[in-house]
Image (cartoon, rainbow, N blue to C red; front, top):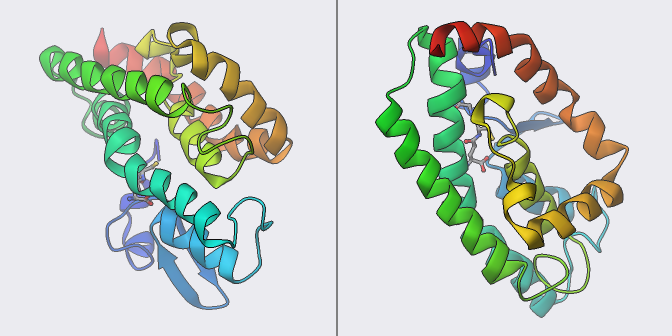
Length: 197
Ligand SMILES: N[C@@H](CCC(=O)N[C@@H](CS)C(=O)NCC(=O)O)C(=O)O
């Protein structure tokens, strides 16, 4: 993402919205993380515990998946795009007013997530871990950039208790999946500093 590969015509042919993720399953190309997750569950490619088959259990997970798009992912992605992707792509420092406004929206979203989801349960949808937790944890990972001077785990007590449990449950895959993100962040840190100073 730091190099803008998602914007290249080769990737646009796979995801016309130029966003990550997208899958190619034996020639069946699909975008949108929620649709991909449900497809993988139907194809028995993820454990049933992660996306329950019973209607009520599944509805609880869907409840979060519906909420998270606007509730957590959108404010997080807008903040990440404004403070990280856009400066790297354009070489221009972001407008501080816009950064403050997106940061505040993201903090409001984290407050809701911390109190209205994690405040009710051990995991996002109840006593057991599932894809809802993975969606949420991954959304939070991209907010840990050193430049943001902000750590969701330091400011939100329920997030602080829950987040390491998700990582532990999904490791070593969780850390493996974040190697690229962490590399992109590290490689671009000094570049970003020069642009934004
Ligand atoms: N609704 C989409 C959102 C996809 C999305 O915003 N992906 C981000 C990464 S998490 C992205 O591709 N950002 C790069 C960009 O905006 O250029 C989904 O859930 O798959």
